[in-house]
Length: 334
Ligand code: SF4
Ligand code: SF4
Image (cartoon, rainbow, N blue to C red; front, side):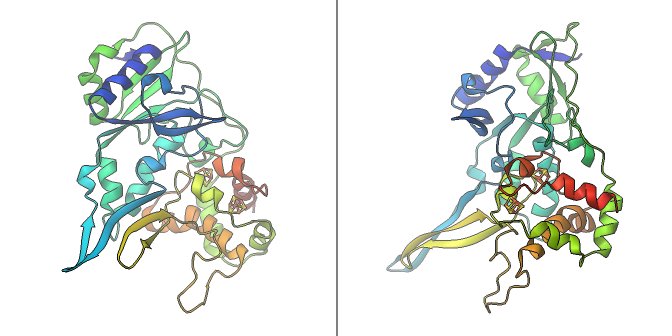
């Protein structure tokens, strides 16, 4: 039987989960923007907002301590952070472009090494997706094979209804379990119709054709044309739900400190700088080329997936106006 949930019950569900000790991450107003942040109460839920940053921090924080160390008389004491201590989490009202991203990233975080910091958070998180009924000029999820009502990556999926409230559809066993365990917040669906999904503008991309062009155009004047403008600020990578590069650095003193895992970006000038001083990506055009190659060729070669969900965040944020959709359109037209 299809289910629905009212806005009030959604907020009450948040309060109940919080009372039971779960972490609830959801769109929350932070000054002039909405961000995916841990909520303190259901009242903080900013329904309808498209968060400025993606939801990847739920699984892959901007910066996290993986161990601490301290010298004592016996030598060096090392305290590992135990991922088993991470709390059960509900990621609520994740947009389809954000909900889909972890299902793409699972491959790389469990490939040559199982990153338990990411994987344990994934295991402990239930994702409740939310369909988009509006899109802006930067959105292009439909061009990369997703859609504003795509359930990929969600465990439970909400669709706004005419007149208020949401249709609730279990997508996975985790979602089914949540519907059953929290049955008091849900009702049997009535006759209310779903609001029509958003319609992102722009043409679909032929991702196979793009990949095939990239296969043959490691060297091409296009890279210099675009990348001469790139400032290498890394904003595109930091906002992206699918970018996942990180660095591990020891901070503190010789006597006491912490080992931290922090986001990195292939747009940064020193990202590939070797200890010898040699930098194989010594020009910005080589760095931007890597961004496109990684998303639309290398990740496909390795994991059979595209590393972009068409969220449009990099387009909205780029300080020099580089539009990844326009770049892909140009490649697509060749
Ligand atoms: S590359 Fe840009 S549009 Fe694609 S997922 Fe990342 S931020 Fe979104
Ligand atoms: S946001 Fe724009 S300027 Fe900054 S690194 Fe990305 S493409 Fe370059």
